[in-house]
Amino acid sequence: MPELPEVETVRRGLEPVLAGRRIVHAEVRRPDLRWPFPPRLAERLTGRRVDALRRRSKYLLADLDGAETLILHLGMSGRLLVSGAPLGAFHHAHPVPEKHDHVVLDLEGGARITFNDARRFGAIDLAPTPALEAHRLLAGLGPEPLGNGFDGSYLAARLAGRRTPVKAVLGDQRVVAGLGNIYLSEALWRARISPLRLARDVTPAEAEALAAAVRAVLLDAIAAGGSSLRDYRRADGELGYFQHSFAVYDREGQPCPRCGGPIVRSVQSGRSSFWCPACQPRAGW
DNA sequence: CGATGCCCCTGAGAGC
DNA sequence: TGCTCTCAGGGGCATC
Image 1 (cartoon, rainbow, N blue to C red):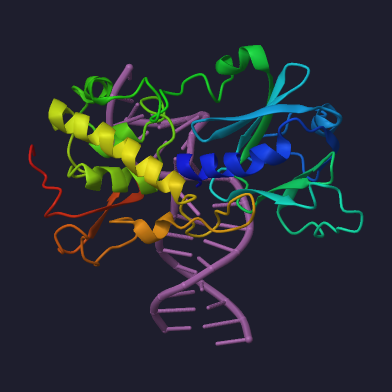
Image 2 (image 1 turned 90 degrees about the vertical axis):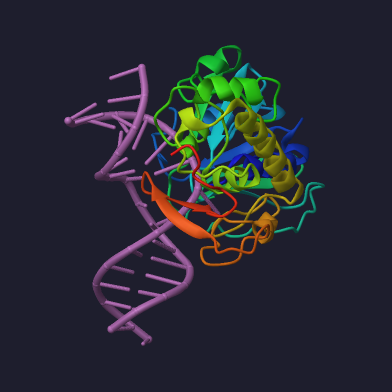
């Protein structure tokens, strides 16, 4: 899916289109994605002004007037695409809805936002803004990796004593929110820690390096507009380009950019991990 | 409580 | 050209 950098890139693309504008028409073309949509979704969106577009972990949060917030999750294949003329060119045609275009929002001024999601692992919900943090999808999330609540000592404390691989802990959204399979492999490579190492065997110094690596790789990826492997697109439809900067992800058999040794792939919990056995020794085993 | 595996769904790409 | 098989960036849930 879109991980944190991809969601943040989409947010930055949508914010200038959405913020301060009213939704003049909402078309909801199916009743659900991963879960059923909230009742009367189209009616509840129509006429509402979007006051701000925020991000929490991999969720986009559109604060609406009337103290409700629209919660959006892109799942694995979700896209939020902008079309139309923001200045309202009279003859500007919107594209005909395509397969997997599930929700279409028309904004005052003429822009249109379309939620397309082939695999339908995405999610949409509405929640009262004051109680947003208590929403079932947001309540258990750990700190933002780019925020003040995430650093080496915090991470060391969360890794301590856990007999599960460090990659599993770092990918647990309750520990830190927003990392997915790509940036887990990339961050562990930057910190020179094997994804197979047990969390309890990661030293405090390594945890410090890992927290720094997480922040650095996320910032680099955001600066590149995210990573486009298959489905992900920015709000303007363009590709991100951080995939060209991968050190290890999806590079099995290719040379490690640091040592030249071959990248290997391991399967953990049914998901691929990519790493360099020379740079990321399994010391501690 | 912690760890593991399954599953939701469609489409792309590989192999034959 | 077409069939079948495998795999994909998430994450909730059942199970042990």
